[in-house]
Image (cartoon, rainbow, N blue to C red):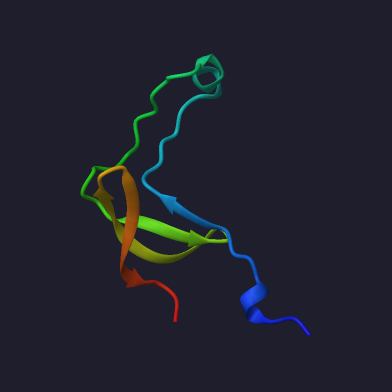
Length: 75
């Protein structure tokens, strides 16, 4: 019998987004910068299997980056 602890969930954090033309994307190379439509202090969205589940803020501690959850979006 399968246990819930064995279920794998893909977690992603969305820092921002941008829309750019395909020809610009194809011209990009290593080191290219894509500007995001958000600011450093804005909340980030936490996705579980591509579905929004929480909001949070980025925490930087030395060379470690983490997300502090501030709001749960699902019940």
